[in-house]
Image 1: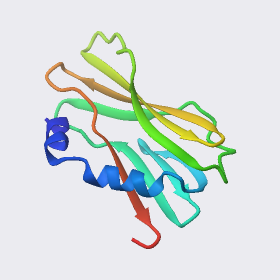
Image 2 (image 1 turned 180 degrees about the vertical axis):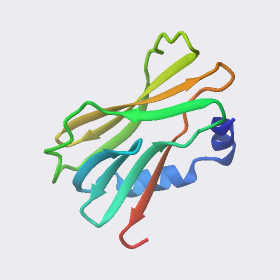
Image 3 (image 1 turned 120 degrees about the horizontal axis):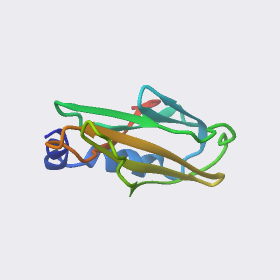
Image 4 (image 1 turned 180 degrees about the horizontal axis):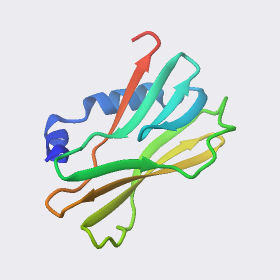
Length: 133
């Protein structure tokens, strides 16, 4: 249901945030509380998270990549890619990759949605915070 609400509401904020951030210089990248945060040299931070939470779901984001060494890189693109689901005896466990491409390489996060079969899907949202909002 949360995913459907996100789809119906449009994604103007996400599109606008990405348009403003792409081409910018990265000052740091970190994963905190299921959110991938990309600090930019202009004082703003691009936050990427799955905002599709509905009842009876467990959503979380993970990343095993080393996020150091991207300071000074240019943000080239942010995209989602399909990933195989994970076998889970207690219900459905969907996975989607969130790929951040920079001039110094890529970082791939995995966003997970464990649910009872009545829900599902992903609603990756991007927001720019801080700086000269």
